[in-house]
Amino acid sequence: MLKKTLLISYNFPPVVGGIETYSFDLINHFKNKKNVSFIIPKLKKPVNRNLRAMSMILFSITTFAKIIFKKYDLIHITNFNLWIICFFYSIFYKKTKFVISLWGLELVYKNKKGVLPFIHKLIVPIKVISKQKNFTFLTSSNSSTNLALNYGINKEKLFKIPLGVSKETIHQIKNDVKFKKYFLFSGRVTERKGLSWFAENVLPYFPEYKLFITGSIVENDELLKTLKTHNTEWLGRVSRSELIKLRQESSAVVIPNILQPNQNDFEAYGYVTIESVASGGLVVASNYQGLADSLKKGQLGFLAEASDLKSWVSVLNDVINLEKKEKIQIITERTSYIKNNLTLDKVFKETEKLYESL
Image 1: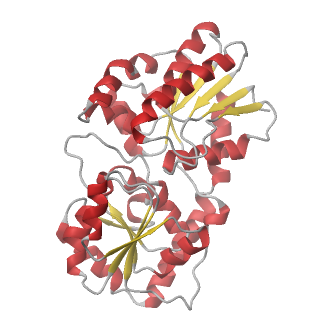
Image 2 (image 1 turned 135 degrees about the horizontal axis):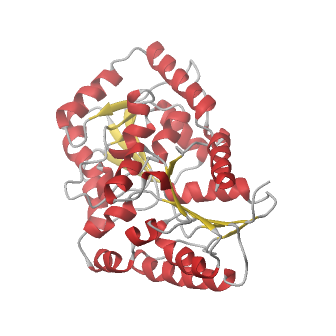
Image 3 (image 1 turned 90 degrees about the vertical axis):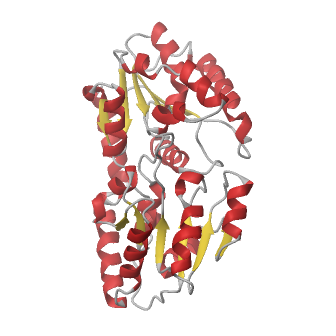
């Protein structure tokens, strides 16, 4: 039986992203278990980007006020930026254990330019928190684990549990599928995802192919403007069934993350990567950071070198030129692997074991 456990997440739908999806799945899995409770923000729509930092601070303060007179054996926060809750709670409840999901961006965000990264550097004491006796850090990939180690977090405090997908996401491809002449990107559109780079540099080598983009968040208007000047089509948000069909019929699902020379952004795992494979898509992703981990170093998808035009053109040509029978066989094998090894049930069984071991 689980100890008295509290799950806390600020990153939660309707905001779209990998951490939000993980948090939703985590809480959905544990919410009906005895001794488990949770706290999430009550949002009808995403908070304005410029107000998110203040919103998160207010959420931390109100959450702490809610729990200060309640004793928990274990508290799990799904984002390091909620550290203040755990730190001050630990002063009053010295036997409580804390699990903090560590994605990697928290460690490199201070390298970005601007006021918020500067403030983050001043007030987010990652090294101090990492040395607290009852604190454990949960990572999802070798990349995020290694980043944490390089940052000075003790190896014995780190536990790696790869992300998984829901059974509803897994769809075997049918033999009568018709592969069409388009590439697909689905997910959060930000500069590090490399879509502008892909549209400007790679797409011209495939004049017969369009780039379809699904998602709901664009980092800035300039990025969207860049995408609209090339052979691309912005589809916005689509239903789960539409997205599965788009993935299965695409010539490739592309995830072209670009190099981050200043190490100011980070892809911990690439949830949408593994989700695309599970849905029956042929995934081509950058061999970079957590993307390579999520694709098992190429076992579950095709890898091209990040920001390398020659590599991307070569890999995409290889994928396009595969016989239909080969494509279906590859997709079927990879989907089956995920079904047997990377489901949410397995992920959260490992998470539950971690809780019980602390």
